[in-house]
Image (cartoon, rainbow, N blue to C red; front, side, top):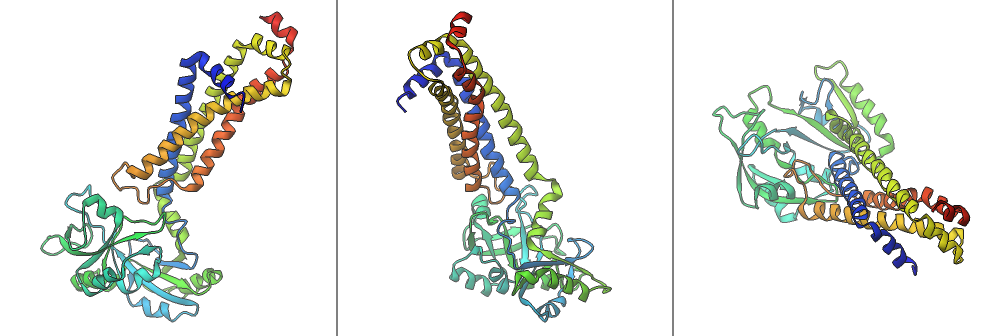
Length: 385
């Protein structure tokens, strides 16, 4: 560390070049942080998906319903611990641009199936007691300024009322959740929806069943048993793990995770070239000075260390500043799209990866110039000068 002042003074010789190099690294890691937060949002729920949970859907498509009567038969299957069900509602608040996930669920079993969602006991009791009650995630409540006790109208896109009026719900609770949990959803009573549509083709139908099994190792066998049970029936089923279902749903709009990684990779590779060029140019300008240092007794290893310190200082200052600002903006200000990206946060895993990449960038950009400086012969350097 005693040579750090020398390293810093060398960097400040060409202030403009150093500042622009630092800014390039800063922007690259700021972008990296945001891209990883977006990637995390699109992968929302995959990491939290229970290994013991299965999804039972209509074999044709998720938009096709499953009979409510299947529930009793599913409960009777050996190895099934508990079940719940839901219908996608597809409502929006005030304007079509204000869309968010909302669904009709079996309130008594839904929250038990998803322990990653947390709701105060009093709010749970209030929700169960109110047939028009609903609970909403903290992110959506914040987005629209809702609070417990509000009466919220949702205009339906699928389950239209005969009078075309909005469906109204009483907010009985605001749920929170574990890191990465989707806190943008609204849940209301499936019975309330079914009462209104019982006489239509939507009556006594559910969108999908969620099953918890006793032994996750038996999930493939139970899934096969379920689909065999309903084979050749008017409504055949397709059963898969919840993790596979969520991952497949996210990939319907493209492999966002891969796209984010490719963009981040291209950006950081460009920074590698830019910083390496700046370091190489800096060393070329100081060839004679390095020869003088060697003349004064600085060994090859020490010269190599000084050059590596320069590249590492550049990477550390620019990279930590960029990654730190990305984490601050994501944590403090949240989703820049206004809650369209659920669970918008920068995972600790990606922060650690970012720190490792900063260190690797420092060593990679300084490696070649450092080796050249370390092998420099005093006579050649002075003659060249």
